[in-house]
Length: 200
Image (cartoon, rainbow, N blue to C red):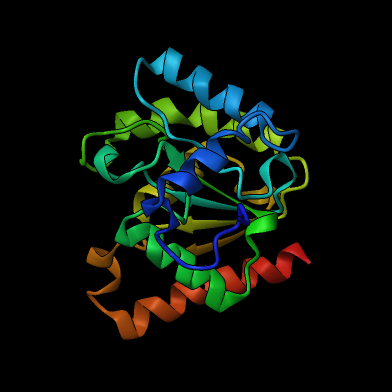
């Protein structure tokens, strides 16, 4: 079984999730796993871990969303393979844009669960040091795809926008995309495509 699924919502299959969980301490991911676990301890909150089916610390593209989706639909991983419509949209947009999972990494500007609410200004400020720390670990990073307004605010607060190529796109949730699919879906795909080019 390939750790890089070829179809969306692969985390419906617990075998896929278990295979990934066994790779959390792989060389490309160990440092990120430790980081996410420390964030969870410091914030006294659940934090989904980084997906082994990614570039890990070698990633050239960071996909930055706002905060984790409902824990009930997740796998314990921050992944385009999760069994929810937002993750499925990310999976499809990356595939359409030719953005390889092997050079990219998904994360949230606020990495801990917020019980379904949008990040507050206080949440975004509290998360800034963690985003800055993550960026320091991703030494091969060339581009960031900022997905949605709260993620954009968090990115701006981090003060790191001048270091990398930044591509803004709508949040990939159905609530966002379906408001104007003819306009927003192409924006999402184009941001991923531009990031893929930047990673070459």
